Structures are given as structure tokens and as C-alpha cells.
Image 1 (cartoon, rainbow, N blue to C red):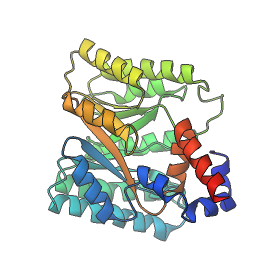
Image 2: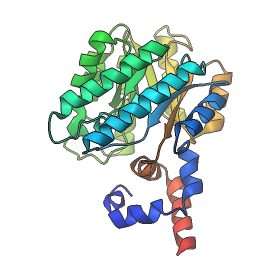
Image 3: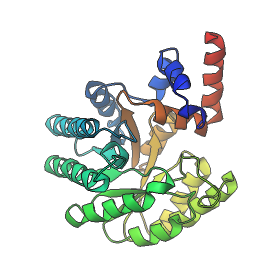
Length: 302
């Protein structure tokens, strides 16, 4: 599925409309009206992080438009009294990190604007991680942002060989680190390949974060890893509000509500926007049930 996502013909077929019911399961909608409406509903019992979809932007105007979209969203979250329960997540490649010139400076300046707007309304920003070729540059940007905005969250992918060391570096006082398994097709030279290897790496990284001084953001839908996280948190003297369990919008919603009802802090990753294709394809690749539904839809259409 990740390889097929590189095909322009395949993308055109997917975006032509027949898979909208499945897309809508994972994506709030095209605009901030839909995103805010879904966020308001979710925040009755959970927290939310909103992602304006887009990545690998090579056009300066498009990167600037993405910044404007975040600024508009943040102002609206402030006006509607949602900023205490809703933050935003950003991908640096959507803010200019993939531009042909001055990419890192543009991405940093763009992220600073978003962080300033988030701070003004009383919420936070988490910087998403992308494929392994951007890891060093992304973490360098996070470190620069944390000078003025120490609450900026970082995302680390357990599948990468380097991540345990990165957890140790980032788990200082006041830090926020979201640990996920990783959703990109990475080579064996830099990443664990088998599900068992990735799961064991996740636990090793989680031990570092739970033993650190920051706020671990445990991004997984795996019931076994959630139970391990709860055990490690208790063993480290953390209560249910001293870490977050994070899940994707549309994935295990009943489990999300049940965990929240038990007193755990649960945050939902809520994407919206028109550039949903790459995100959607990674969700299909992650879960066989999603892929089976997609395949049935494709065959029916044919």
C-alpha cells in the first residue's frame, strides 16, 4: 500500500470519491468547521490534537497557506473556549522543510509563528516526525523551538534503531514526548522490521520515558502495550494524569472512551484538510481490517 501510494494514477482513483466513507472514518473533514465540530464532540471526555493535513510541500505559497490555516484554527479554538483541551500537531515538511532553498529556516520560522499563536490562546504544539531522513533536522528544530516554547512536544518512532537514545535526550523536565511505533516504510539499516522487534523496542523506549522527568505521550492502539504503559507508569510513581494515552481518530473509539471513563488522560489525533491521501494510505497499511474494507470497495467499484 505504501508503494502504491507513490502512483499518481492510484492517487487519482482513490481521490475520485468512492472511498469517502472510509476516508471520513479517519479524517474529520476538509475545513476547520468540521475539525472544530468533531473536536468539540470528542472533548466531552477526551483531549484532542488537531493536524492540518499536508506534507512534502515544495511550494513556498503552499507552506505559507498551511501556516495561515493553523493560525486561523488556533484563533478559533481560543474564541470557542477549546484551547484548554485541544492542541495542534504540525509536520515540518508541510511548513517548508522540503523546499529547495532555506528549507530549515523557513520551517523553523513557520513553526515559531504557530507556537506563538498557540501560546497566546493557552494551548500547545507537538511537532510530528516523518521518515528517518528528516529525523535529525526535525529534532534540531524542536530543540530550537523549546528555547522559547519549552512545552513543544516531540514525536519519536520506536521502530528506528536510534530512538531509545533520543528518548534519553528528550525526557528532561517539562518535556512532552509522543512515542509511536512508526508508520513509514524504513530500511533495515535504520529500523526494526518485524512486529515483535518493534514492540520490544517500544517497551524499551517507554521505560526510558516513564523513568524520565517529562510527560510521556503513549501513542498506541495495542491493548498489550497500553497495559504495559499503565504498569510502567504505576511503577514509576505516575498517576493517570501524569502521562497521556494517544490514539487516532476513528481507531478503537470505544476503547478510547472506556479508558477515559477509567480516569486516564486520553488524547485523540484528529486530522483534517484536503491533503488527506498520504495520511489515509498509512492508515490502510497499518491495519489489515482497513485494507480488506478498501479492497472490497475497489472490487465493487470495478
